[in-house]
Length: 471
Image (cartoon, rainbow, N blue to C red; front, side, top):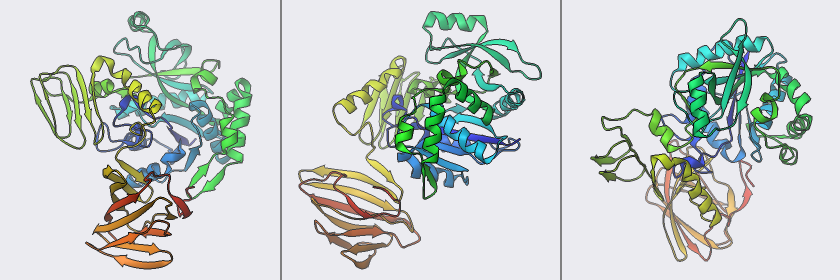
């Protein structure tokens, strides 16, 4: 019996703004260590018996970042499926189950969000072992976190009668996020667990329940899979079919209605890092209860989380604050109101600003670019192109570009003519010129780009040819 990890990486992490943004959400960030959350999610599986390579379901806009982060840790995914739109966890799990049963009728799925933190890996492995026992008897298993506080930000699972042969129990009921009084009652009773959103079940058994409970969801997912297309190393789900899927969680679509739901109690240092206050809670603290990241100076500060990404941050005499600095935004909030950070994101969206979506450094499959300065009719960027990579063959209707090589070697194509540029050399790309930039060397290419023109938006790019098949 092979265990197939399925990693769900479709979240946006709005409560961790300004670090987490739509183009670079929390699962792709190194929040708790030097590794990103999705890298930690995959690596903590090592040591489990009969383990297959992970299947990843992610937002199509993050596909190259996901692939690169897997390459960095030496993991080749079984497959990477791309969601054209977000449709919650039930459709993603159903697509994965359909794919796996076609490959292996006896496949057992371990469904994991990509953005959770687990500090006790041996306890995590032990819980999976108990879950496998219950799954072998046909149960759909979820993992209930033993609560240590009356948390109102999590759903709860009430345990039922024990199952023979494992620590798993039948699920008596699922409860939505409670108010404080009910959460305190749940904690005092000892009968409730936090709902972790992690699941383990035979893929075919899960599909049988989806077919019984939500046949329209199963049909839409099957069509999205069958009509999908291979794109480089990725599998694109069909947009129209996937958009037709109901946007439901696994709990709502299946687990709350099946008679086969089981829960394995687990105490493994788990957190979904749903807000900055949660990251403060799980991190190592100094003697005054502070968590610091980056170039930070504190004086008489207590119980605060202070993170500096691009410059020094000094905090004096503060208590219970969240302070997060990035190159283009600074968040200051009380820890008790960390959940309200999403209001900032809503404000940015409503006012057509870009800070909810992009950092000043924007990652592309070929490398990245970073805004340095901008003004009336001009913009300055840093550009890094990875060895062997190339930008699309393109042209612009409204801007001209000056390129200066800082380090590395650039191959520049202008209207079909190629030239090589090295350190301290430059070139000019007139408006309307067909051009391409690539790095033929063995080291990263770093450049400065100066744009000038009447319109400098990123949508003034007409791609004529692109090795990454972007439109």
